[in-house]
Length: 219
Image (cartoon, rainbow, N blue to C red; front, side):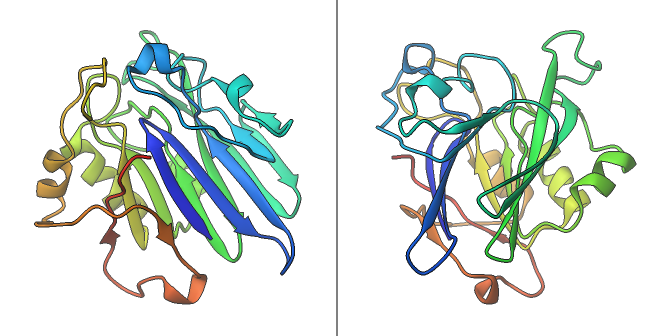
């Protein structure tokens, strides 16, 4: 499995279905006019949209005639299992920013959770049960429209993933005012974490005990 971060909450995930066939998943493609930097060319079999805001729902920009999922529910597409779990974009039950869908994607024996623009102070017991055991958590940390670094660290503690990748934080030229990733790293007790271009991982490579923080470069 290969995971690339494209900035904001957008990820490109490539899973190996067979020796000859790959399935490409794009989550939360953004409108570059809203964000302030260019979204690279993306092609996918599946697109996941966590909510209908311009920095997350530009599915029309993704090539390949993908199957688009934009609502909670359970799906199986090309041997990829996807569960969409209802959540809130704010901490007042959506009264300010509406609903957000948390997605759990299972493929290659790895379970990934993308939190979207999760804005609740914490997960409910029901949501924790629906999310289940997670190998790789993609969590927003920039505050303003989502949880901030300290709140994100608390959510990591609720889910207890084997790896966590921060997203949706301040980057050069981003129009949206967000906090830097450093706040989250400090809350997680991580220092000197060097950003990498991509994460390539197999189920057997996942850490067995402590949660590993992986910082990705956008691009």
